[in-house]
Length: 160
Image (cartoon, rainbow, N blue to C red; front, side, top):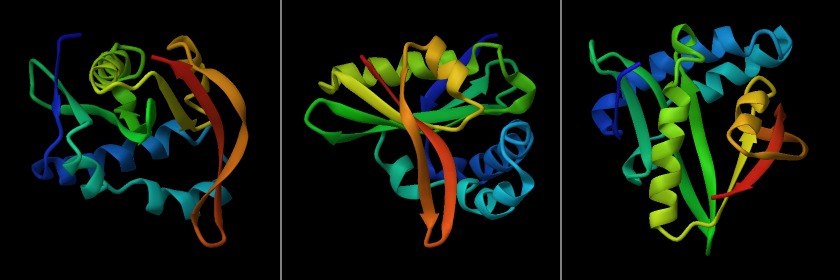
């Protein structure tokens, strides 16, 4: 699939919100009970303007149509360590190279910024993909999305 991968901008926020809502609702349903999703989805399906403004968050568009079909990026945590952030692929385009294309850009820009190790908090659904990308499981965690709202995830990392 031909992709255009570019830095996200504020103009993408509406399309990102729609992408997160549609994809996470479909893709996470097999690995999370409805009781978790009903509280988590409203909190994880909104674009983060500060992340977008950082310049290391990217969107993937289908080259033929310009449709936004994926997004993801990274932020620097401390010297040499980066965090993978808010990666998503449109459920209709899973396993078609969208996330792999995004990760090529993520790793390229992270390396260029001196990042040598990337960490992520993966959904249960995304663990096999991250493993295929070279990430190793470090352990199970519960992310606190808001006080009292916990989301089960998997801590992972890899060298860049």
